[in-house]
Image (cartoon, rainbow, N blue to C red):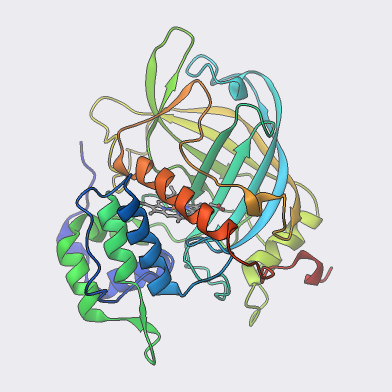
Length: 357
Ligand code: HEM
């Protein structure tokens, strides 16, 4: 089954705008960068990605090499037990577990000004530190722009802003899109789903497919999403470079924020290894419980700053699909983590104490 819109509906301008929306990724010729034959899992592929992030964004010492700008949050997840027949993971038994999380903006520039069109991320670690944990890093998009690590890398390189223009190189964009029609199709879908006004009213999605495995060993392909129960977020103050983060901090000061965890079950024929392809809207979803976030904290030693929200940190009862993005993500997040933890740190531009009442 595919849900690809007709390619003709996608024009170059909408793609450029859309690509900007997914983290201002575009345009450079790295020229001599050698493509590793084995894209993932080798030292050279990790180095290739880290070099790509550095060439496009600069060194960004101490920060994540993607989703560099962020804010730590804490709260808990209350499972209602509804997903326990699909997954034997402890987190889905009725009861509560602590959650550490991080809201972020896509892109590797830690000091970038917030814009409503930049993709928003939410990383979550469910469970007690040191015990079995479930980690997930989600986006407020309906689909991911790429279906392969190579696609991500090519888009990263094409995203470099040309000095003096404030924009990616149109020739690099055109070349990228010619080589990656799946991204053009995904961007058309993304464009049809305008973002919510802030972090607090955004729905975040896993986009990649996983398997839930139950006590009997039955494997069910699923995607998950966190659906905001607040249906609006405070408007960012105009001219505030941290407008979206500051609004979230203010909103959390006013009381807890809640999201419902929906587990969506695939039907035969649904795409399981391609995150650019959505599943039909009418797929059955299970309400698995409630995420409640209660506090925000500036990134600091010991909080979410130092967590690697590796999508393959999974408890018994959740398994990865064969989506090639998953192993790539796990490998490259670890490389980014190792690099950033060994670098000198400077303060995050998002400081909770600087946000007025
Ligand atoms: C091949 C594809 C991808 C690559 C190479 C990639 C790369 C990265 C890197 C290097 C980081 C920083 C990791 C760290 O230092 O801790 C990151 C963070 C993140 N990525 Fe990806 N990513 C990919 C796909 C995705 C997908 C499919 C999603 C969502 C469905 C996603 C969502 C996020 C989020 C939310 C964060 C921030 C997590 C945090 O706060 O630590 N990424 N990504």
